[in-house]
Length: 151
Ligand code: COA
Image (cartoon, rainbow, N blue to C red; front, side, top):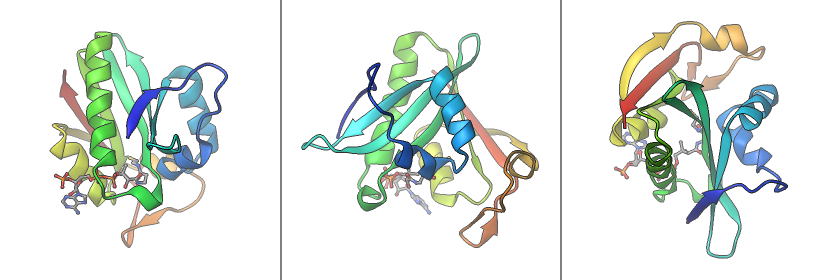
């Protein structure tokens, strides 16, 4: 997979972005405030995406990491997260953060395998910010697990 920045005028891969976050409103906010990167297969099909969102001075948040469902489990997710870490480091950020739901078992595994450590829990985040109930791995998504790492 070849990863590059989405160029001005190119359409962001909305279906893929909504895989990581069902709220179109939040995704659009992230896209307007952050920088979108896409991962393309050898034949130019977009199979992965992530957004780097500046939050505080020297801190960036990695949001909307997603891999096309047919291409998951092949290492692309790890490649995207590691690319984001390198990109953030090269841009001069000193801290990178990420958040995921309490039920997102494989995401929590991936992020910790890429060096993130848990820093806190934003209790009831998904109750406050999402109208519909979300269930994953048979667990209701209610809390946001926050993770970060120094770059
Ligand atoms: N226990 C231990 N490790 C696990 C695991 C589990 N239950 N589930 C996954 N992993 C590990 C894999 O083994 C792999 O590590 P390894 O390379 O050391 O074996 C790593 O997590 C990730 O695998 P990878 O193939 O790179 O991930 P992927 O291409 O399937 O992408 C997501 C991962 C999360 C991006 C992808 O599943 C996705 O797009 N999901 C939907 C969108 C989403 O939820 N985004 C995140 C929002 S917070």
